[in-house]
Image 1: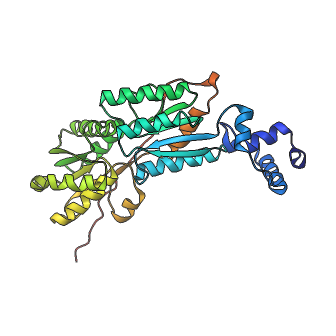
Image 2: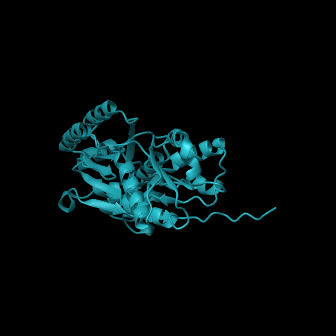
Image 3: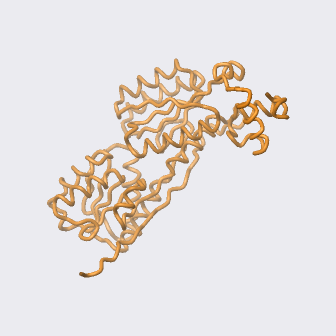
Length: 334
């Protein structure tokens, strides 16, 4: 096959069995020749044989909370794209935020011999839970899998994250220019992601001389935002902005506000966090923070496939989040 493509065996192997460079191996012209020759000869990569040859698996495991969640689904798409570009496949496991199931999944992964494991679940401040999880991940890494954690946590492994506190602070500072009576809809108490976003948002409000009227906690979901607004109902007359710490919560908040009798965005502003594209289409003036969810995949795969000599140990890779503040649309009088 290499002869048919007019390249060396090494070049053909690198192009058909991409490593950390992924589809960037070789020039575009050489890649085309090798791929055309492989197709003409009916050649396909044998993952089992490749694993024996290089002594490393060609699969990655990804652990998420729930694939129905927008954030988890987007991270999954990014990981799969990054893995596919390197000739690898992804096995997805869901925890449903069950700590027992979480530990069982990690134990089972030790027997599956993956090249790396990406943890994309929300971490907590529950130290006993995190300690047990840390021990299981350490055993997994000792068995040969490279562990990479998405998001900030106390787990001592390679990490890819975003400075969500700064992004939340910037969002709050900008929204405070036009809103002064603000209620926050936060995720579950003790969840690291929620704590970071609320801490940053409150810091941004403080810089503008404001403090939130209320901080309501609920699940990071449509139903969580819906329930939180009804818990806040008696104080809604004093609020001009409901700041949800996830776009999913914002959706539930908007539904509840409409039921109660507040028109969004005319009579009540709702903001979010995550940047679900559909919301901007349906709700002009919706402000949020765009998280680089798909970019996590590329960054995590780079960490997993680093040569041992180049490995940056537990150094954190930080990606950029973009604050998106959209002005309310002007309504012309009838």
